[in-house]
Image 1 (cartoon, each protein chain N blue to C red):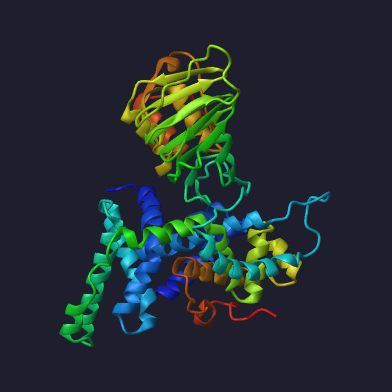
Image 2: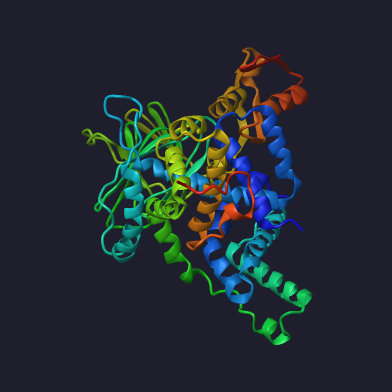
Length: 190
Length: 319
């Protein structure tokens, strides 16, 4: 067994940065886009569970093999994909070279990256995330400052958190988290 | 089946509550319970948390307050700054390989018990241990980091044209690309090298007759205090112990009890106090969670029959 904290830091360091490539891989190999977040989560959960037993030496290969097996199982179970399609399923994306420049570019330019992600949040949500992260205001101060209720501020923040995670990792449009559920998160900015 | 979106929303609510500051022991217990329910909860939460932490970089956009301590009115400049950043992102994609940014000083800090990773503009990465303050300045011709206090692990992107220097009190560490950590306790500093080679030298121009220290390689550790510097015999185990904080652990190998206590005290608000007497000669070996000083004290009590007196802020250990 591996220490939980160790698995967590490995997961954040080695696995999460692959999200961009993993999501693209899932998209290319599965016809319905709305299943992607569920698949991705299942890949993460399996990879994390395996990491708790033993940290895989090559995170990238492990993540994509897991993703591939998952897609094959689902395709078989759903019987919506012909066997040829399954057989055609892309091999694990080629290693390192493809990813390294991306990774470096992200690290090199993290601030710009975060700013661009924030810029794509809805206006009100963006404002509240900036008050929290740039000005370091507490949730209460933000509520007082904007005249919103504390609950609404928190709803905007949860939405911001989800949006940032999608955009910073994927670099693409997120599924609008506010429309799924979440009290108060539906109210868009003024 | 519970979908990712539903779990993610729950995770975001937990993260927002944690972020909110009214976090108490009951919340922590309820959260731990939620997190333990299934691995999907865990991965979903860590994913959000890691992005939310990364957004801390936005603090660099803050305009230093002039005169008054606090921003009294809303700032209107940053929505524009954010909009401009989209454009910048496109421009930077073109420029990124041509000109690295000019020196942009930044400051990063962790609280007691904190641990966070900071990516630098040059592709290097710094991991900050508990109660640590650093300043960074990444320029075209050199890269400098001041360790004001605490401890940090450096994973330096290789760039011979821009030496990377860590300044810690009286000494500096110079590298081109390697992995090492630097710890500073007031005037004392300690360097532990995991990979590559580093040079340690006094910050002041070498006084006459000061022989330069030999290059440090993997497994080497150097300690410096004032103008004195000492290189310890190469030992991978010692480096592993010195870097164990990166996984939230403390490794002790026949460490004096008082020193072990001092280590725990770096991470926890609740401070260990060791009574004098025979305990002075006692040594500890083992592996412990840095943030669980209570468990450490209980273990000492059980294993060695020591007495533990608890107050709100301290754990006093005596024979």
